[in-house]
Length: 428
Image (tube, one colour):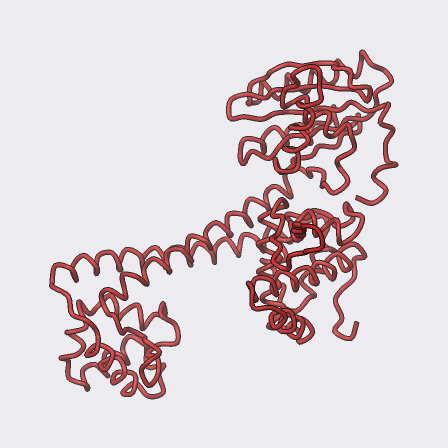
């Protein structure tokens, strides 16, 4: 966050830590001298949020030297969203100059542990959070920015959730497909029957043939007719497709009828789920596109989509998690927030090359950055060459290492474009 250290006087600031749970919020108010100005519990509902608001206003009235409010709460999934949204949008608090932060619990865990070890008292979690923000640990954090960003964030995060379910279901159904039809679409044949295992034609074959035996015993001309029907005559050589399919059927293992009955039910169920997930992703993408059109910081969104390979969905996901690139001092700070930094593994003069990611950052942002990187590699030769170079440098986790290093390179570009409101130009 650029020049954030100088944006307020800590001696004139009220520091508030809120430990959020499903049913209640533990709250602690501190001044810069670590004097506890208030400590109380409130329900995690609208009445409880109003109580916190009233306590803040009364504390400011009783301490006239305080004219700035810094609030911190740990991200606890859906339980922290309501209270964060409420406190960050109340006119009574906005007029008092408020900044609210929702942070990854990993960021505060070590601080809380050290505080307990050295404190004469037994500070609770809310006190530890208030003292954490009092100590100036907001350098690489983004203030919570209300409902607009929250709306986009919920959609992009839900999309990630559905994509993961889709990938999991596809992996799962492949096991059942192998049991039913062991040589189905197997690359060891002259050619794969289908380029996409989950295409409409492939799906129809899996659903309409009870077993490989049925395909193996079918007359070729009849099978050709079905291939043309299922594919809507999209194959250049449907007879060759039918022959390959029949060859695979004849070389597949045979099971008893009871096994096929169970497998067919399971496969049909999985294919139905896959179809539903793909339909949901299309709907979510459309909703994201509509929501993005009303964003305040459209310049940063346009900067993102100007990069070949970063389309509207990836741009929306990245923007919803970053908020505003200008909250970060540099691309290193942004990379740290994402979690694209490495733990050091060193002992004496030995330094390991196999160092894991810290993964203490924003996992959703890391997902969209890495997915965007994979797409950019296919669109920009500079990034493709960089990826290949890094992949060839080691045999240990070659792809994972290369994609992360290329993602770090992309973060540098993203930060530059977003923070300066510039569009990408290939010759630059």
